[in-house]
Length: 145
Ligand SMILES: [Mg+2]
Image (cartoon, rainbow, N blue to C red; front, side):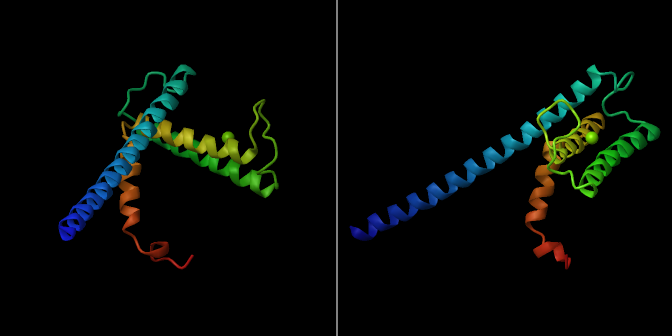
């Protein structure tokens, strides 16, 4: 009798563990779907401000792609300059309550999401796939630093 109860308890624990893993996966998938939703919002804001005039999602010319990359690089450079000036945690120069680090990191993400949506990329799915892959990589991805 006791043996039967122990087996039942073991089965219950395994089931609970499976349920928790499924729950985690569901939450992770929801988070990545939210990323794609946010990317669409970033694209829409840029569109409303004239940055995608005459463009079609998924159809990006080589010269337009060059602009996307240059603008993304520009935001990374602005973060670099804020760091060089020792202003990462200083108030940014916009009328919003953000430090320079917060503003420039937000700009980088906004530009990246806008670019992804312009290209027709499901960035949430891409991040999920890359994160899953990264989980399989060795410590520091095999690099020394
Ligand atoms: Mg900026």
